[in-house]
Length: 75
Image (cartoon, rainbow, N blue to C red; front, side):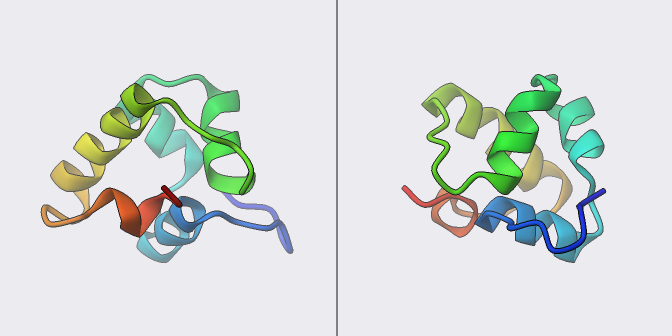
């Protein structure tokens, strides 16, 4: 799921809190494994708007219907 002592982004921390794995998010969004890893562990990674939309659609459907992008990404 998440490595021990590995730094996490806002998205990574929220997923961990919800008990969701990178693989879960990958399967739900059909995004590349490397993209998901970057999104959850690399604070300098800047995703495309299209990628953020895919992730937020899943989060709003599966975790929190009132979630905001700012809650999960440093925009």
